[in-house]
Amino acid sequence: MNTVAKGPEFVVAKAEGAWLWDDNGDRYLDGTASLWYCNVGHGRTEIADAVHRQITTLDAFTVYGDFANGPALELSERLAAHAPVADPRVILTCGGGESIETAAKLARAYWAALGSPRKTHLISRTGGYHGLHGIGTSIAGMDKFRAGFGPLVTANSVVPHDSAEALEREILRLGADNVAAFFAEPVIGSGGVHAPGPDYFPRVAEICRRHGVLFVVDSVICAFARMGNWFGIERFGVCPDMIVFAKGVTSGYLPLGGVITSGEVADPFWNRPGNPFHHGTTYAGHPTCCAAALANLDILEREDLFTVALEVESHLDAAVRTLADHPLVREVRSGTGVMAAVELTDDALGRRGITTAEVFAEARARGVVLRAVPTSLLMSPPLIITWEQIDHLVSTLRAALDAVAARHPE
Image (cartoon, rainbow, N blue to C red; front, top):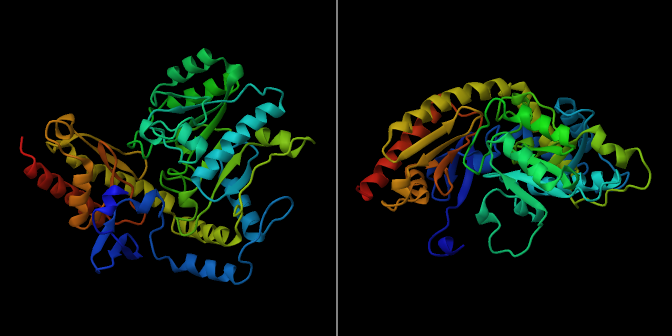
């Protein structure tokens, strides 16, 4: 807030495809699909038309209790049909943060309904980001998101993101009778684009199953073709107990999220009396938002953006890896999904006084929007980006790095 207060705001006025325009008419390449979500690109009239049709028929109505609406039912059936979850059930929300809250509360309520109310502890990973609602803030794998807010949800802990053995040690340290769930992103996104090793998730799934811990996959960033499939986790051949989704389900055109849970987790609430799940949000199952999602899924399937994404992933990986030889670059991480990170060297960030925010600003001044996190520049473009646009993105980032390096000589 203090930074924005000191200077003019960057006002986005228009968007089309992979391009943005500010209120001065200057054009920028959207290298982040806004905030990891505009998978089908900006300006899709099919989605706008679907929203118009729905909002002039049934704009909104609650889905509490036995209330439902056609778009919410159709969307839930469609998502369940593609989910790598046994006997899936769908709970709709308004976004990723709400979905994490829902999954965490459901995990705890599930164990309580089975007679194990002590199973409340939640485990997450270093670098993990799970939204900034109460529980999401509490289980964040980055200290900056928890600092300054006082006590949050305390029954949680964080383990190294790349070690299944560390997860098992933590479960044993806590006692499995106290652990409700483990949360993990298929690829850590906002924490710096960290992909798992090939055996990580199969090992994690087996550990959770053996110790009676629910395995919750946070696919808010990774789903809806960003990793070449529906929910991202399919890439690793495992079947979680719950999947959290949002963002790409509507490509951000309207807010929507949800939780897909297994029939086993749903069973105490669906099939046994006396176990109501006292949880819900005002706009959950919003018919107009669901109509936007259905139109978005139509585009994903009609244009086979699942296959396209794998091709984009390969080209982005090849292009961004050419930055590995830059003197300011410590590491390039890419090749698993349409996302990449360019991490700066310790020397650049330390002795030379360079910040990722400075590189970000230089790139934007040259017409490319990236995302800056403390040590890295992140990319997650729309899946409809062209090869020429990818090359423009990477060459502009190189030019930005060169310009910043010249201002901070060794």
